[in-house]
Image (cartoon, rainbow, N blue to C red):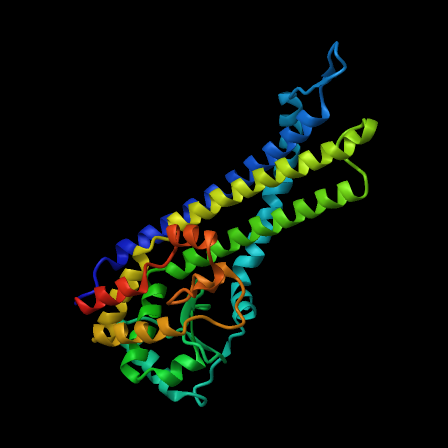
Length: 335
């Protein structure tokens, strides 16, 4: 089988990366505006003839504070993103426990990677290893200086040369298609959203615990009740926005990329059945024992299912970044 559509896939992934870069600030600014509007609505208003407070929204005031907050939000997120973007190598290493693999440690891996790179005419990526008996592999990096293929010790020990070539060919295809750049971008954005959500919830929790509240009136404990309502509302809004962004990144990271990487890997190794056999072995014991981050796990050639169970598993499967492994194997067996 001849691997086709490489330049088209690269162009699509580059466009998706740009769209994510443009969409994320808009989502963050929208969340800030809603947050300010909620506080304004709850903090403003008047008492009617029955002594009940009637909340009102001062849009001009909201826009005034929002415009003042915009440079800080954009600047803060931009700096945060740049730091994380260029520190992605250490971030991935820390999350997976990967280390650099020297040629003298395993010349077999280096020979396989070099032969495949010469076959497709690409530069040699870095090679990392994770000391883990489970089977998995992934590609990462945003440019030629950071492109890396990582494998587990379990994978190297249990796969033969042809199967290992199929897996590495799959990961090299992700690099060629610029899939890794798109994935790293989405991982950073999801991390920013998660961190901001955690900080907001903690600040609001501390506010109510120490009696600050968001109301100047605390008659009969109404200020404390109002704080609880604010926490619930803001929490729901933040969760909804974060959930929307998760769906956005899941949509951008199409499952089709795995089929294309499988096809590219089969072409590079010259044996689709070897890659199918490797996927079958990996699916029996996938994952990395020390990896606890779902966003990083989406880099793996076979996504471990330990991150989802029950109700969560329903949504995970609905918006999964990886197609069913059995379907991938069937696809390879038809090539």
